[in-house]
Image 1: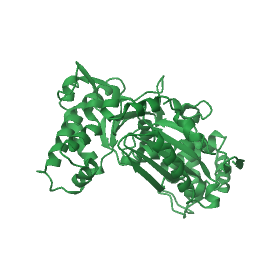
Image 2: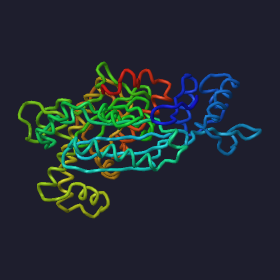
Image 3: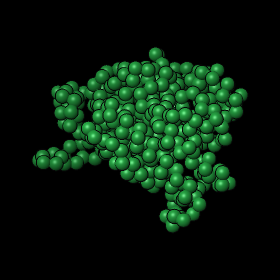
Image 4: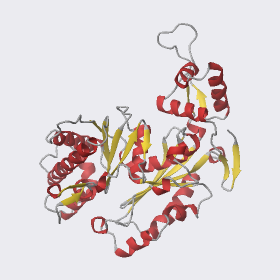
Length: 416
């Protein structure tokens, strides 16, 4: 792998050989591996594995850690090989219905810098200049050497950002503006670096695969409770897209109208209208309370059990958990998921509370003939979508299964 000159400066060109990409992925998911372990896992000869590893070391994508003795073996201590945090950099952008976030990450996925803006509704006339300025500010924090290893920009954005106008409380003029915009091209027009686009729930699913899978599930449904609830599917530790790149779009799953607690106008209602964060926010606002402040306070004040805020939150959890449980069981009847990870725009303690409530509600349903997947609370939270977006350039340049996941030329991710 070499450095090449592009219009945006000197960028990493990525890795062409499958075995190089495979080794990088194995090390990323293991933390560190010795040459002997890499040879065994890849079934490459010791000589071939060593040659590839040495090349990746020369390219500064890997580095050698301190020697350690391998368990159950005698002789000289082995040298673990790990990802070099300075091997590559990427920028992730999350465009949401209530805010835009930008993050700069290193090769191990650590967030080095972040910029955030909150708004009442997503106005393109504000968002795109804010993204352009934010990217410049993030790049300015890199040294000249780091700048040469900046791979690109990944954008995470909801489907139909102008959709569900009533629920999102978006002015009609703004909705029409989004309906005529090519988001990827709007960002790319201002950037010399390659830009990728992905659905925000899919981005959160990508982040969970790399950082938020404590149970190490191989096949799971990822649920992200954002302003609108969404999801993604991981099969054999690979993102599953479906025939129309829409797999895991559980927000649109129809449920009996009873799950909306009287707010539905017909016999069915979508999960979005039963288990999204916007419902909680609206309940707080009707009491003249700031949703973000109240949620943070609830997460940090365990003695607030009798407060109005606590009552509002508990009522929302009860409704959301019942609806999510129904959706999980319905999904499990089609795909025999090993697990389900629930994350979202909530502090970790409240996410765990919601996950526990979903478990309780699942056990109330008729599940004869099914094996329930194991539930797990996500650990990434609000950063998941921007972080997942930032991983798109890494996948394109370094993932062995890139032909399935990403093709910047064919814009596979843009179609999510």
